[in-house]
Image (cartoon, rainbow, N blue to C red; front, side, top):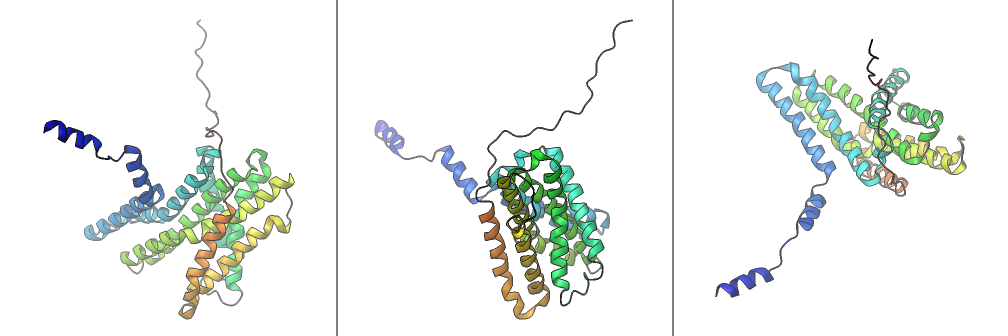
Length: 295
């Protein structure tokens, strides 16, 4: 009887560790886990600030919440294309910081008369200014540093720069919402964490990849329609997005269509982008200690 039971147990199919791991990754991708983790930390921080009446931790919560959407989208792009390996981590970090800050300052200067009461051509102006602002640093790097003119590093620079801009902009909106309540700030952060995949990052990614692809094929940098149509598409999508959101009413019906058009266009543009080389390590700038010769 024991032998029969043992033979039956051996014959039963068992799930292999690889299959379990593949199933887990399928239903819980890295970008989703990162988004839930960071957004959860933001929610907990805001809740603690409200329960303890300790506003000192609110800026931390705002920063973490503003990062949730851009971080998740960047992970999705990195897992799909491996472009994060094409540039050293320290270079990507400084590009995120400087690129995002430059874009915010640029937009702050040229949107000062339009940001609060955008009417008529104001929506188009905002689209032109913000999309131009976000490509300044990525395209400047591609222009000045020949080794970064390939499509893979150009996409990496585009994602981190647009991510920096989106984070800083979300922080601005959330801090303004704090004048109303912590709940209002939380709602702003949650809403923007969702729309990130259909806004700044794919718009900038599309514009930069189109330009880098054209320049790589031509072997030189030229401001031709073939290189700039991605920027034009980003401006149109951004403008219609602003009109649909701010206009309200029946304009809101256009929001899902604009979001889907943005995402599908970005996926199509990066369909052939894949970095299959080794991970680029940070450059060695440290001065090695050399023992002084004996006296």
